[in-house]
Image (cartoon, rainbow, N blue to C red; front, side):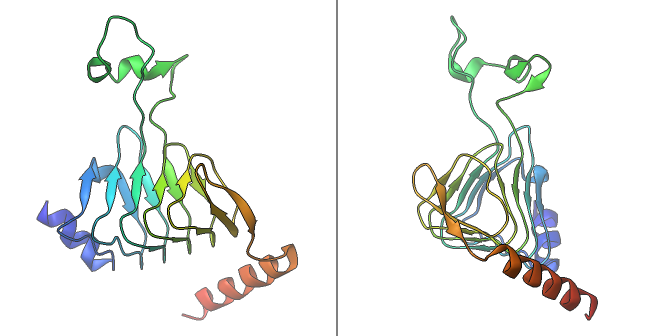
Length: 169
């Protein structure tokens, strides 16, 4: 486990001793992302992919899976991974993708199958159950689009400026 933490530290990703995890090998974090104390990330049979320069407030929770609860004669904990497949697709474990430059406030919960578009802001306490496009400001339970951070024209300018700054490094 120390080797995993060391590899994360070398890339500027800072999991703390109070970092709850499951399936850490399914966790992908890009450079400049810091995972704060009190984080909970459960990667089931699907990955969690976190882009570069993502900000998290205290105590985020990210879960890439769910339980199947509709099988008669079985306890929920006894359902196998194979039983999560419907028509050849595991619909209970799906990736979570948090794109570059996202800011997630304190106590956010992000659930399976969600993609949060680059540059988005997730309000504190939000429970994100569906995907949102880049530069969204989202919040609530369940999370809804509050507004866009920028106009279409401003988004194009921002993307161009980010591209230029990336090439000048």
